[in-house]
Length: 331
Image 1 (cartoon, helix red, strand yellow):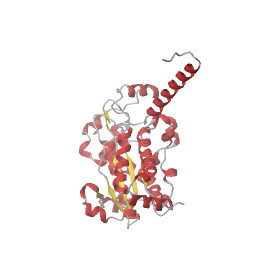
Image 2 (spheres, helix red, strand yellow):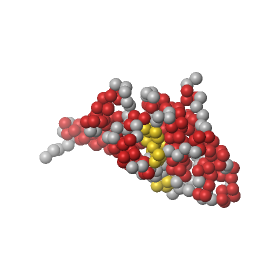
Image 3 (tube, helix red, strand yellow):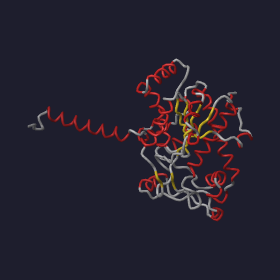
Image 4 (spheres, helix red, strand yellow):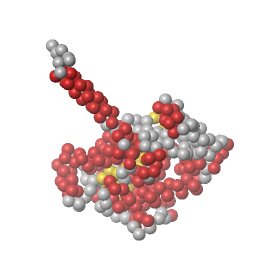
């Protein structure tokens, strides 16, 4: 049995506080072990989860997952260090759209890429991004940042280029992984390939997470909210999304319990962390942290540019064809 199926969280996790980049000095940063420090990025969009939950619920969740990962890292690998990056309210797509603040794919991708490259200039090589949203274009943008980080080594300073050469020989491997991509099954991708359409949103699951992470941010009226079903069919909800009219919650918020929210996040970490550890110890991250969302063209950040380029090439080809045939008179 692989080691990642054996590891379990301990009570030590509840007392450990990981380092935060915002709270350490440049000198402290320079003293961290370069190849045994992992930087964790918490990202997610702000969106409506119903009248009882905060807009930033999924960002709170991403932050907690980063903390759990950093804690687990230093418990299982005592000579390693985890550092939490600043919370970034960056989400490319969201579950609801009536009240949501998404950003363009390149904003999230470039934020991750630029921050990672900046830290790579100081010798650090391990980065992991946790997203509260498991949306197709969100995870794809994070995965694209990881791929671009590897491809862009030749453009970085000479000292980093040397580290990159060592990485190719297997001594060090600079990686930026989309940690939550490991949670997406092929079945989920087939069920909803182009936008997130979870069976529950703002229901017992999300409300339980809210009660666990920030009880004061959850309106006590959640116990009085009635159960709601999803609106219409999958395509009907897709139409509402495109018109920015999909909002609110669906599920049963009144059934929420903080203990269930805690268990849900710990189960996620039990699924993710062993694969993260395998990556840091030399496994190929593409086999562990690549969602099938990223192979669907409309989810890619450059998709619109590709479409525009194809249209322009088609127009040029048609114009050239008719010009050669003499059907177009040129001056």
